[in-house]
Length: 221
Ligand SMILES: [Ca+2]
Image (cartoon, rainbow, N blue to C red):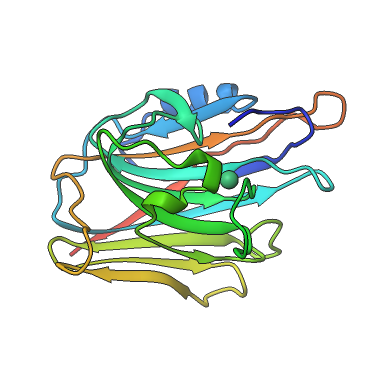
């Protein structure tokens, strides 16, 4: 989408993945003024897993960014137009969309999943609607007073669930649960875990962005 200088946000993501290299985090930190990403160097090959991530999205007054994405894709570390990462991805994208482009009747922030086939483009103009696998509105996700978290749980060939914590501590709200074969939850067997964000700062007003990358990997079932 066209970016303007009228929006700004802070986006903090706390990543504690052991196999994420400090150099990648540094890269993301320095890139945060425009676009930034952080991707695992080693693919996630476990068949069942859970990823928990703590993040913080806050803006300066009414200025907010576009949001961020969480990825489990065959590709890694390629800058692009989808929340700072490459389009036509192959695998799962979870979008934490904080800027409503054009999606009447939907309250934002909106969190949704898309399973990319490597060819289909993200429906940028309608906030991903054309290819939405599942999603939920999460009013209060931005500027929350408690640590906001997301937890993605995957059982290969069985289920994919996304839970969010943003209303009160230690209370998880289910965003969606998908089951196979009713839904296509086939994440590539070799997929890289990544996060990306797209932010425009109004230089005169916004302080230096603080992007702390941050997921916490828990458990192998
Ligand atoms: Ca949007």
